[in-house]
Amino acid sequence: MRYASAFAILLVLAPLGGTADAQASFTLEQILAAPFPTELTASPDGKRIAWLSNDRGRRNVWAAEAPQFRARQLTSFTSDDGQELSQLTWSADNETLVFVRGEARNSAGEIPNPTHDPAGTEQAVWTVALSGGLPRRLGQGTSPAVSSTGQASFVYDGQIWTAPLSGSAPAAQFFRARGRNSDPAWSPDGRRLAFVSDRDDHSFVALYQPASNTIRYIAPGVDRDHIPR
Image 1 (tube, rainbow, N blue to C red):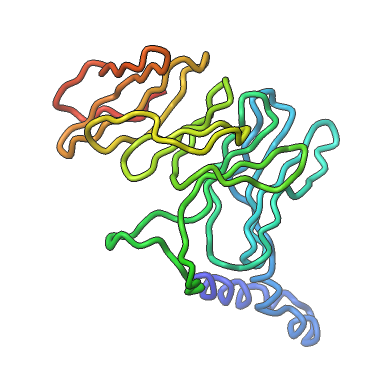
Image 2: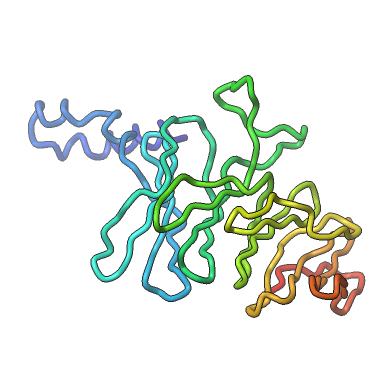
């Protein structure tokens, strides 16, 4: 589809070149080499922005700050390995970005591995600081949610896991709950985590309170409750 779209653009633009030389110099490679950004997101204080950039298959996190908004690259993934970046999320203090590297499993339970890497691939949650330094892998998972107290919670194998953004401790399963759990969402004060508990033909919204180590289900019924905020 990408090559078909590029070919269609060439067909449209070719008559506009003016001369045969101009048309000949406008190549398919030039079109495919153009970088493109996705997932533009503002920091909680509105003074910084971040986005994901795909430049010839090299996917990286970029950011810019007020007032100049001069773009700078935060990560240095240097190869076209087919590993998508997604779910870009700011920390509450505007100093750290959390993102997911890799794609979800297919129906056979396999993670995409387009370069046939013998070591295999994974879908994992990463962080990178605005101040610089190497990105840090928190653990396998997806759907990161960042608390105001500096914890990142995410989903792995149908359960909620957590890790400190500081890297002071490894990722660990946050709690055990029935069903396939997803959609973590922290309360603004960082004292409670809402999530969805999927029971196949229905789902609940639940609240986990770390201080008391308790789970409470909100108006459980036979419907599909989801998207807690």
